Length: 182
Image (cartoon, rainbow, N blue to C red; front, side, top):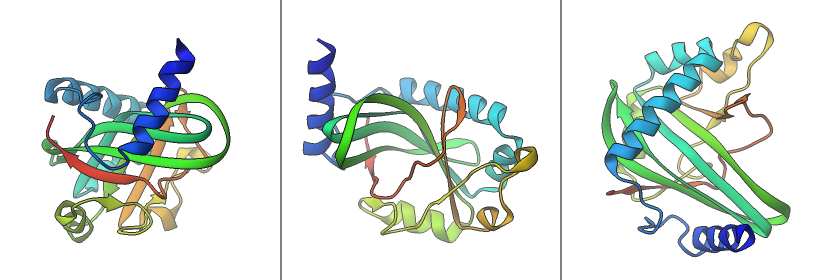
Protein backbone atom coordinates (compact mmCIF):
# COMPACT_ATOMS: atom_id res chain seq x y z
CA UNK A 1 0.00 0.00 0.00
CA UNK A 2 2.75 2.46 0.95
CA UNK A 3 4.73 1.52 -2.16
CA UNK A 4 1.76 2.34 -4.40
CA UNK A 5 1.19 5.64 -2.62
CA UNK A 6 4.84 6.66 -3.04
CA UNK A 7 4.79 5.58 -6.70
CA UNK A 8 1.57 7.54 -7.35
CA UNK A 9 3.04 10.63 -5.65
CA UNK A 10 6.26 10.42 -7.67
CA UNK A 11 4.46 9.90 -10.97
CA UNK A 12 1.94 12.63 -10.19
CA UNK A 13 4.70 15.09 -9.35
CA UNK A 14 6.65 14.27 -12.49
CA UNK A 15 3.67 14.30 -14.87
CA UNK A 16 2.21 17.46 -13.40
CA UNK A 17 5.50 19.23 -12.74
CA UNK A 18 4.64 22.85 -12.23
CA UNK A 19 0.96 22.37 -12.91
CA UNK A 20 -1.65 22.92 -10.20
CA UNK A 21 -2.70 19.48 -9.01
CA UNK A 22 -6.37 19.30 -8.06
CA UNK A 23 -5.98 15.81 -6.55
CA UNK A 24 -3.60 17.13 -3.90
CA UNK A 25 -5.06 20.65 -3.56
CA UNK A 26 -5.81 21.76 -0.03
CA UNK A 27 -8.36 24.45 0.83
CA UNK A 28 -7.29 28.03 1.51
CA UNK A 29 -8.15 27.56 5.20
CA UNK A 30 -6.01 24.40 5.42
CA UNK A 31 -3.07 26.09 3.71
CA UNK A 32 -3.39 29.23 5.87
CA UNK A 33 -3.46 27.19 9.10
CA UNK A 34 -0.42 25.13 8.10
CA UNK A 35 1.46 28.26 6.97
CA UNK A 36 0.95 29.94 10.36
CA UNK A 37 2.05 26.79 12.21
CA UNK A 38 5.14 26.54 9.99
CA UNK A 39 6.09 30.16 10.64
CA UNK A 40 5.83 29.57 14.41
CA UNK A 41 8.09 26.49 14.08
CA UNK A 42 10.53 28.42 11.89
CA UNK A 43 10.83 31.22 14.45
CA UNK A 44 11.53 28.63 17.19
CA UNK A 45 14.44 27.20 15.15
CA UNK A 46 16.17 30.46 14.26
CA UNK A 47 15.93 33.93 15.71
CA UNK A 48 18.17 35.15 12.85
CA UNK A 49 15.61 33.81 10.36
CA UNK A 50 12.84 35.56 12.25
CA UNK A 51 14.76 38.85 12.09
CA UNK A 52 15.23 38.48 8.31
CA UNK A 53 11.57 37.53 7.82
CA UNK A 54 10.47 40.69 9.59
CA UNK A 55 12.55 42.77 7.15
CA UNK A 56 11.48 40.85 4.01
CA UNK A 57 9.19 42.35 1.35
CA UNK A 58 7.47 38.96 1.01
CA UNK A 59 7.58 35.50 2.54
CA UNK A 60 6.66 32.36 0.57
CA UNK A 61 5.87 29.46 2.89
CA UNK A 62 5.48 25.81 1.89
CA UNK A 63 4.53 23.92 5.09
CA UNK A 64 4.79 20.38 3.68
CA UNK A 65 6.88 19.59 0.63
CA UNK A 66 6.70 15.84 0.12
CA UNK A 67 9.64 14.28 -1.67
CA UNK A 68 9.54 10.65 -2.75
CA UNK A 69 11.49 8.50 -5.13
CA UNK A 70 12.45 5.09 -6.35
CA UNK A 71 15.21 5.85 -8.88
CA UNK A 72 13.09 8.65 -10.31
CA UNK A 73 11.88 11.14 -7.74
CA UNK A 74 9.56 14.04 -7.39
CA UNK A 75 8.42 16.54 -4.84
CA UNK A 76 5.31 18.61 -4.41
CA UNK A 77 3.93 21.08 -1.89
CA UNK A 78 1.43 23.90 -1.56
CA UNK A 79 1.78 27.14 0.33
CA UNK A 80 1.11 30.84 0.47
CA UNK A 81 2.86 34.12 -0.21
CA UNK A 82 2.60 36.54 2.69
CA UNK A 83 3.14 40.28 2.32
CA UNK A 84 3.10 42.27 5.56
CA UNK A 85 1.65 39.22 7.30
CA UNK A 86 -1.34 38.88 4.95
CA UNK A 87 -1.89 36.17 2.34
CA UNK A 88 -1.27 37.60 -1.15
CA UNK A 89 -1.63 34.36 -3.13
CA UNK A 90 -1.35 30.59 -3.10
CA UNK A 91 1.39 28.62 -4.83
CA UNK A 92 2.62 25.10 -5.51
CA UNK A 93 6.22 23.94 -5.75
CA UNK A 94 7.26 20.91 -7.77
CA UNK A 95 10.51 19.32 -8.87
CA UNK A 96 11.71 16.07 -10.40
CA UNK A 97 15.01 14.25 -10.06
CA UNK A 98 16.77 11.22 -11.44
CA UNK A 99 19.45 9.24 -9.64
CA UNK A 100 19.90 6.93 -6.69
CA UNK A 101 17.03 7.58 -4.32
CA UNK A 102 14.66 5.45 -2.34
CA UNK A 103 12.10 6.59 0.18
CA UNK A 104 10.17 9.66 1.15
CA UNK A 105 10.54 12.72 3.36
CA UNK A 106 8.55 15.77 4.33
CA UNK A 107 10.20 19.16 4.70
CA UNK A 108 9.11 22.77 5.06
CA UNK A 109 10.43 25.55 2.86
CA UNK A 110 10.43 29.30 3.36
CA UNK A 111 11.62 31.74 0.71
CA UNK A 112 12.20 35.35 1.73
CA UNK A 113 12.11 38.07 -0.92
CA UNK A 114 14.29 40.70 0.73
CA UNK A 115 13.42 43.57 -1.61
CA UNK A 116 10.39 44.68 -3.59
CA UNK A 117 12.16 44.19 -6.94
CA UNK A 118 12.75 40.48 -6.34
CA UNK A 119 9.20 40.08 -5.02
CA UNK A 120 7.62 41.85 -8.01
CA UNK A 121 9.62 39.76 -10.49
CA UNK A 122 8.37 36.62 -8.75
CA UNK A 123 4.74 37.81 -8.67
CA UNK A 124 4.75 38.75 -12.38
CA UNK A 125 6.06 35.36 -13.52
CA UNK A 126 3.78 32.69 -14.99
CA UNK A 127 5.88 29.94 -13.46
CA UNK A 128 8.97 30.87 -11.47
CA UNK A 129 11.88 28.43 -11.53
CA UNK A 130 14.51 28.60 -8.81
CA UNK A 131 17.98 28.97 -10.29
CA UNK A 132 16.60 30.26 -13.60
CA UNK A 133 14.23 33.12 -12.78
CA UNK A 134 15.91 33.90 -9.48
CA UNK A 135 18.76 32.50 -7.44
CA UNK A 136 17.80 31.41 -3.94
CA UNK A 137 20.62 31.65 -1.37
CA UNK A 138 20.16 28.69 0.96
CA UNK A 139 20.59 29.84 4.55
CA UNK A 140 22.70 27.80 6.92
CA UNK A 141 23.40 28.64 10.52
CA UNK A 142 26.87 29.36 11.80
CA UNK A 143 28.20 29.64 15.33
CA UNK A 144 25.66 31.07 17.73
CA UNK A 145 22.77 30.35 15.36
CA UNK A 146 23.57 33.29 13.08
CA UNK A 147 23.14 33.36 9.32
CA UNK A 148 26.23 34.29 7.31
CA UNK A 149 26.55 37.98 6.50
CA UNK A 150 26.91 37.23 2.78
CA UNK A 151 23.70 35.17 2.71
CA UNK A 152 21.81 37.88 4.61
CA UNK A 153 22.69 40.39 1.84
CA UNK A 154 21.11 38.29 -0.96
CA UNK A 155 17.81 39.41 -2.56
CA UNK A 156 16.21 35.95 -2.14
CA UNK A 157 16.98 33.74 0.85
CA UNK A 158 15.64 30.23 1.38
CA UNK A 159 15.29 28.00 4.42
CA UNK A 160 14.60 24.26 4.38
CA UNK A 161 13.75 22.58 7.66
CA UNK A 162 11.91 19.72 9.31
CA UNK A 163 10.48 19.32 12.79
CA UNK A 164 14.07 18.59 13.87
CA UNK A 165 15.51 21.91 12.69
CA UNK A 166 17.17 23.40 9.62
CA UNK A 167 18.25 20.89 6.98
CA UNK A 168 21.56 21.14 5.14
CA UNK A 169 22.87 20.01 1.74
CA UNK A 170 19.49 20.52 0.11
CA UNK A 171 18.64 22.93 -2.67
CA UNK A 172 15.84 24.92 -4.22
CA UNK A 173 17.44 24.69 -7.69
CA UNK A 174 15.08 23.25 -10.28
CA UNK A 175 11.94 23.80 -8.22
CA UNK A 176 9.13 25.32 -10.24
CA UNK A 177 6.73 27.54 -8.32
CA UNK A 178 3.32 28.21 -9.85
CA UNK A 179 0.32 30.20 -8.65
CA UNK A 180 -2.71 28.05 -7.75
CA UNK A 181 -6.34 28.74 -6.87
CA UNK A 182 -7.30 26.30 -4.11
